[in-house]
Length: 392
Ligand SMILES: C[S@@+](CC[C@H](N)C(=O)[O-])C[C@H]1O[C@@H](n2cnc3c(N)ncnc32)[C@H](O)[C@@H]1O
Image (cartoon, rainbow, N blue to C red; front, side, top):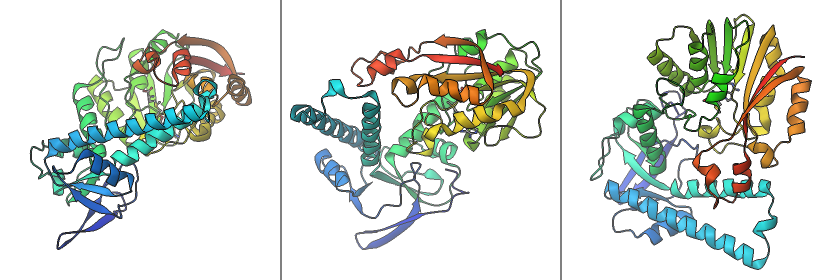
């Protein structure tokens, strides 16, 4: 959230004899808390967990590092509760895990994640203007918070969870993500899809460029990764778009580091405006048709396949007659029975696109190897493809 642009919500509470009112910052879009209970180093993890489960927000007044430990302890309690619920359901025969469909397991897992995020998101800290933290043993949070949330000239209340997101992003932004086959790292910003799993990059490098490759579009550019690959492969002019302003700022940063002059950026819904027809249009859309639980998930979850379908329906109007579309798409949604292969092929046909060829790869990221994950069967079968589509 860019604080300067947001409609500012305030949170009010009573602490001892003092009535307090400060700005409420929530990346997850949670409403300003109604019940705030001050807690500190004397508060036990059990008590904090119970208060949070009862719907209270806990305002941390103790040592900064102890708050991080408290979060871990609360997380362990959440996991234990989830585990108990699963075992109880299995014992009662209500939800025999073996016959559970992948779809319902997926939805259960997302609900549990959302519940965990809500509970952990109830531990709050107060920061002074400029994100100055007055807690004992607090690190300097200003640079990470300013990079994530924008400049702030007044005190605020936010969750430790959002703060941890900003601190994690600051590390990625500093050290970058090494990309196989690219001679320089990519630096993701807060709230932008970080290509930590990028099995599709070799596909982008292997696919033969169309004979004419003067102009290419990268729709939903994120960090700018695919636009940079296209420019490095010799495309004359690349126009990269995204609807997320953070992505545009991030792509601008990454492109500036490459010194590639051929990439232009536009903040739009899907296709750029005022451009010639493209010889090549690439898109790596969010790959799961489900509702994101916060704006941070918009790069992964595409409600009702809005972006994928909008892309397919609109792409021909922006494509030169001999042009190619490279659609990068994981089939995890198919293994989770959220979409069928026939549906995808029907969308290609409706968009009057033929499949010229398809390149496949199998992800090797940690989750696809984790046999304890209830969705292991779907994740281990996942294939990511580059679909090369041409006008029918
Ligand atoms: C899976 S990420 C891919 C990012 C990048 N192309 C890559 O391969 O690393 C999907 C991207 O699409 C963007 N996006 C989602 N809906 C969009 C829309 N309607 N128009 C433009 N971009 C969109 C998201 O903000 C996100 O950056």
